[in-house]
Image (cartoon, rainbow, N blue to C red; front, side, top):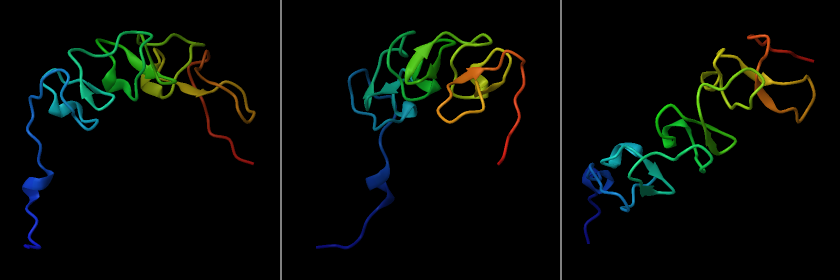
Length: 113
């Protein structure tokens, strides 16, 4: 048996139709949306589960593994700066376990012990 491995064993055809496996790669699906390792006809709607912003339809973003309308207003839950209308996502309070929110002040800073 041959020990030869071609890089074709790593290549997958793009343009996969809805319902086909996509290994978590949006770029493999004709729609551009892969969720749950399956090509979706469109992105996830607000309130539906997601893994990252690319899973959400339209202007939605993925926050705490659910799609929400973007941009998130000050005080709303967020995962990263891009989720927020004011581009400032950080811990709400300087305590362990605090929730991440879009900062009402519009800014954040790093703290250290």
